[in-house]
Image (cartoon, rainbow, N blue to C red; front, side, top):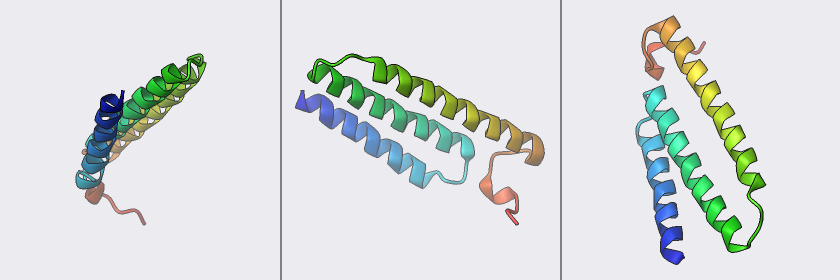
Length: 94
């Protein structure tokens, strides 16, 4: 059981490391955010199985995750149509 928690924590930390180191591309940042959310989902699933609780909260979490992913992809598509790429440095925020 503790081995699984260490693996999930390692997944979370790797996702954060990728998020911080690849901050120039929006697509890579979105993929690392989904990886972080996946590790949180595994942690919640493990915790809810450990306390013998129902899994309805996981369904709510997955719905919110899908909404977050759809919003991120729509921002990415809008950026690519407007600026031609997903670099953050290619457009001016002012």
